[in-house]
Length: 482
Image (cartoon, rainbow, N blue to C red; front, side, top):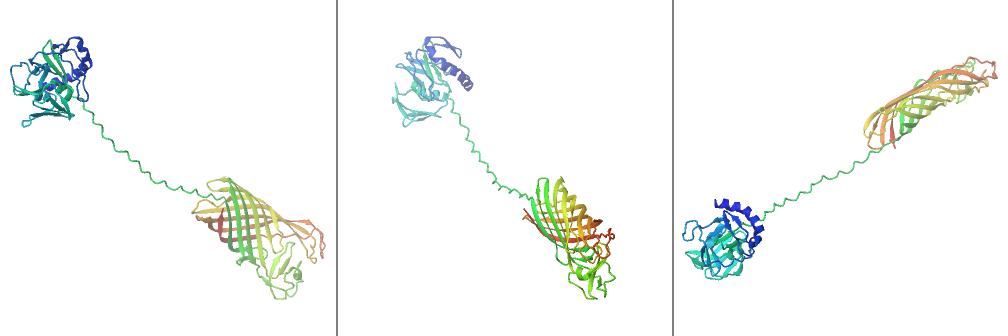
């Protein structure tokens, strides 16, 4: 019950300590059912454990009761009871209180050394040491004078009440009209233990910033060349195989959805040896071998190449190495991005070293261009072009021909095709291969001019003849992107 009363009074003491200075005006205060007038004077709670002593007045000598934290510590001063403290004693105007019992009430531990007659009271934050008969106290390690020395009264060590106020910050007052000493004490609020300093938040270790991925190079242009091996069909060759001098090359540039390309192919062949030079050429119309043969007159029985002429005759010539070439330039617009498919317009030319006229004309078609930007991968490409009316003029220059001086206009429908695969490396090089060629179909021959200057020449001349040409080949090559 004592601890409960002490705790209950703790809250009241905070309020009482705040109004204690006003007690000097003689107003009445109810303290645990006891009306007690506080003597004039001022007492201040010492947060450091030191109390400024109040003016207690002049209490009479003798024993007086102690009211500790609003309950009577000792009710009858003439009787000693177990676990009770001695009442206060007033001697020469100084209030003496029992050291052990009062300090233990305030939570201190008291020890007594009989040899040195020294009593020591300790509690956290405060210590008091007094010696019997010595007017000095050591409070918190500091020597302080006492009004009267400690003494033994009825076997109990008494010390001036000032020791309590200065050592432990107790509030002590003498209430003269009640002839009691009021002791109030609230243990100082312990300094709150600061929360443990949280360990510093470790700075997160950021993973190393990966080096920036280099932006892939975007290629827009290309140039490539290939080697070809295939067959040629025309008036001089009946499926002759290329002899190792057939080539192809092309290059282009893509700009957004537009593309520009130039394509060139040359097919080389040896003419077909399909007969021998006859003993006489009189039976061969419109032919003069000594003029038409690049090697001059051939001896009878020599291997030779027979061919049909445009103006309706037949002739023969020394076997020779033929070269047929075609070249075209293209402007293309992409119509299907996923497939890299382009619609194109083109202008092309076919040329021959056999004396056949060059054929030129406009065409169009579709093309899937090589995909330049997969840096490692296989892709396919292809094209189909139609030149519906490539034309060229042919003039007969043989004065022995009845058509000497005549000019003929030849018109051909030429279809070009190409399909292949390319493999692109990380470097700007790639390899490719495929199959391609053209079909040249003669549409018509018209007479532009007719002179009829040759022997037996007439106008209009004999009907002219057109011939079909075919080139096809497998190829493989190396390309460069830029």
